[in-house]
Length: 320
Image 1 (spheres, one colour):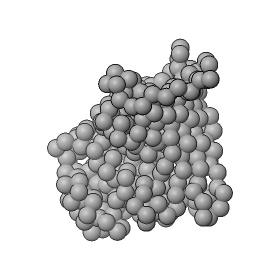
Image 2 (cartoon, rainbow, N blue to C red):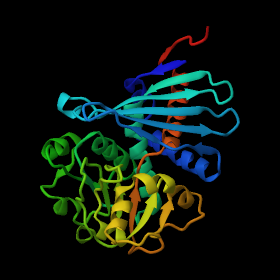
Image 3 (cartoon, rainbow, N blue to C red):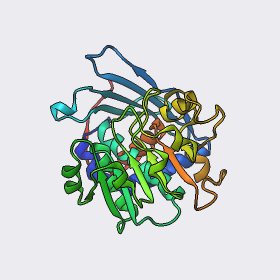
């Protein structure tokens, strides 16, 4: 079994490779080669880290099993730690033998931003001149890298509640003091905050805008207000997961901002050309990213491939 650290992951995969891997993963979903399973979120008490278990099977010939174990520490940021910890396990699909154990925070950061980049490329009207990132954590950094990889000439504007000036300087971006200032004239908006209540409303957004909503992944939390969901074309990474975890969808329904049958298009159907996605330049498109195990599997396979080719990582014996 090959053990790969966060440093190893970052040394073998950049935003471009992550984009390609995750894009290919969505196409594998569309082709029926990825078998997803329900994500489990476990809560052992307010003073304990939350645990998430994300299993998935690659049903191509010799495809592996994958299981991402994510632990979310409630007070991690105050201690200078990433909020998300854990590992991605890849195992032989036939024998079950462990193949690789990969640090999960780096995988999560890269694959989440890559999924947003894939959605943006599929749904944006034209090459954006201004991209707004709302948030100041790990995902703000990874999304900045992913968006710049796609659109190097675009102006990057950052707003964050507590460290906006600092993160803007770190990213070489323009600082905005308010959400309204950040998203003004932005053709692409990425919300990557820890907000539980909406920060982005219909009045903030111009026709033709594409939004990647990333930060909230619980049925009781959302970054996007119901009035904006109501006027948007909603795209999700998993419709089944959205029905249990997507606060943007579920809370908008509960307040009657949208009907129960408000359509949610799965991203893989757009990428495989079985659904048109955007149909005119005035559409507001909203990609709600909950993060699915198929993305971890796709990126994990690419990381493992690159690490093997470059001789990176520590190999350990796991048999008797």
